[in-house]
Length: 152
Image 1 (tube, helix red, strand yellow):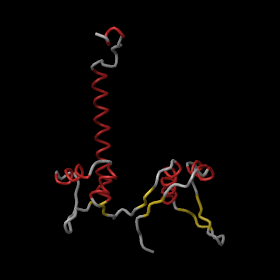
Image 2: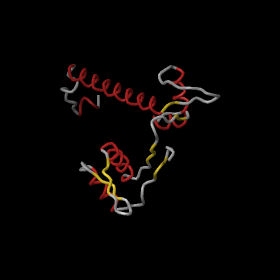
Image 3: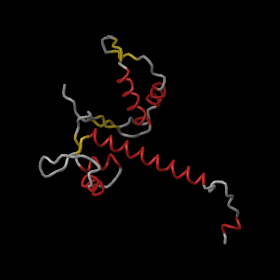
Image 4: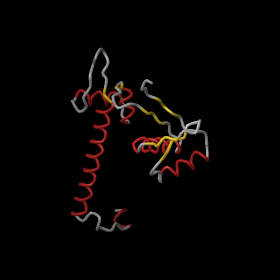
C-alpha cells in the first residue's frame, strides 16, 4: 500500500454522521470491526486522527490527510498558511521557512510548514497577551468611556 495525500469531502447533511462525531469526544478504547466480524483494537494515535478528521467533516469542511514527509508547492503552502503565494515566497527568501529547489520550483516540507505555523501562532498569541497585559497595567481597561467623550 502506498501512502498518498487524500482529500475527503464532507457528507451531505447526514444526521447519523454528526451523531457519530459527537460521540468521538468520549472515545477512549475503540475497535475496528471488519466486514467478516474480525475486531481490531484501534491504537490511540489512530483514534485521535479519526476524531481530528471527523470534526471538520461534520462542520462541512473538506479534510486532506497527508503524510508528514510530504513536500508542498509554494501555492499549496500559501493556501495552508492562508497567505498569498508572493507573501509565502517573501517568507522563503527571508529565511523564515526552509525550502528546497530541486529544479525551477521551490518545495516546502509539510513538517517545516507546520512547525513555522505553530511558532507563528505562539508568537502572535504571546504578542497579544503582552499588549493586553501592558494595557491593563496602564489602566486602559479601567477608564469608562462616556457618551459625551465619544462625541467631542
